[in-house]
Length: 131
Length: 131
DNA sequence: CATTTGCCTATTGACATAGTAGGTAACAGG
DNA sequence: CCTGTTACCTACTATGTCAATAGGCAAATG
Image 1: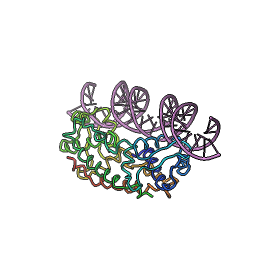
Image 2: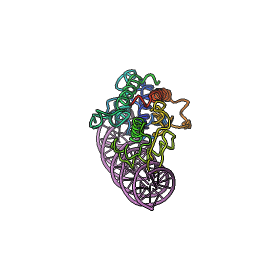
Image 3: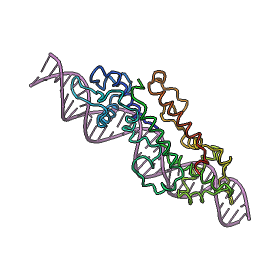
Image 4: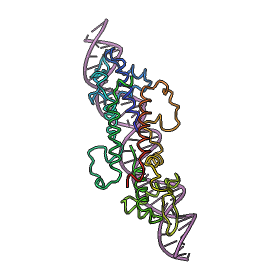
């Protein structure tokens, strides 16, 4: 289940894409437009900066801005950054191939196939498709 | 993310399907074969009974048994019973159409499409495909 | 009637989620 | 240089879910 963090991040990115022409957008504006607590958005925006999806500048006239062109972002990379992983089961989350049952697990192939489908879906969906 | 509850439930169902010929299977046997705490499996098995996916009988010679033929179960119904919902976002979890943003939400169509894909995948996957 | 088995209630520790609060650092315009 | 604006930093908290564990009761069979 995608958490609010992932969903809010997506809405920040959409908002930035829609107001791309206005230069740097302060979080205050986004919070008002999207009706989300600015304090909470700070946490999320910070992670977007750390993940190199947006750039942030302090001070008067500062705010956030997309680094690339809007059409060069995929929904998948945004969600994966925020959620840590899009994996459907813990066994596939990171490089935890430590599951001793992996070799004989009867369900693993199904999870793998589903994860591939999920990955393909979100990584082929571009941010601009949501505008 | 599918929880252990959903994954264990699937393993119970697989185990029951594989030992269908042996009549009623006590949880003790499943716990040993699958290397899962019997106590925890009790909780899960109880829910499978309540959801009418298996039948349980107490007493000597008792145990669990599939109600239908193995090929008549889908992975989707098992997972949905255990997880409550397979929805990817809270807005689509139950009949909570209460989200005031639903009409203008730019991301809702994407979540709906993804959920449909997920639903189709798991509901077209039969239990017997995992044996 | 004793043993086996499912079923019921309660409790627990660990962790994640969804925030809130208050302060500090950077930056621009006057 | 000063002041206001903006991002960034640390810390805290309430709530809920997950993944179990524990102990006993009910039902069924030989």
